[in-house]
Image 1: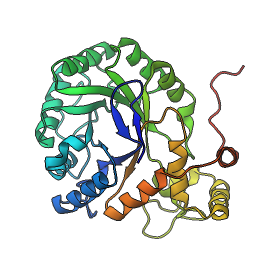
Image 2: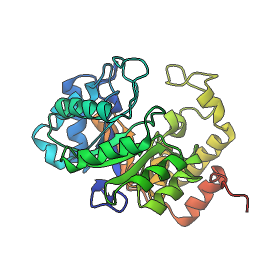
Image 3: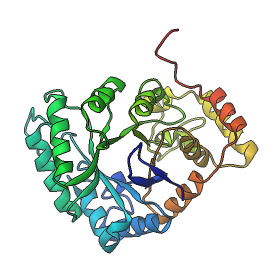
Length: 317
């Protein structure tokens, strides 16, 4: 397993992260404590140190955090725990200001309790709140760092200008990452998010590396029965079927699995620090760990750019 710094900070993480959004998800093997422990321990044994959760993950509020904390148990010191606040919870009062100091501090204490830890390594502002001035949220997060409740903080699902605005307000060494939707099919993060991350010294943490299964080979011609995407699903129609067929050909020519190439491609993108990949079974952890170690040549990367062109630059000159 390769390990990278999260941006320009001293926080080191595995290039493959474990996405804990599946912990506590109904109908999965990791729905309960036994299944969660099997997957989390498999991740640790594979060298994964970065575990990415949120208070909204699981079939009820905080279940993913609870299962992750219990599964880590005495191995907590081997893990970099990331969790998030800021998405609307079922129990939130209407129009709650989810970026306010009051709200953030309450959710932070909830997460610490559920995880069974006295600090969180990386605390994400999950989605910007239009009601709260960004200055207040940043000040509250920095106060949590100073209090020892969190070690670092990060942003998620922000536009490039919002990421830059947060970085301008942040103290050096406290804001360390941005988490965004980024994969071969959807490369829009290359327009503003990646340049902002490079400029401000932030690590990029991509989620949906397999584009909801589109980059696994399951949906080359149509959505299979029983799949997570249905025929006519906007996500399926948004992807060019010709691109997926060409991608299959690229992988077949090299004897590589499509999912492996999709994950490996992200690992080759600078400044990606850790790739969030979910898993509900230990064997999926093993497969993902193998994928992230795959080396793609310059010719391979150029060929993939031909299939999935880089995002159009914002500037027209």
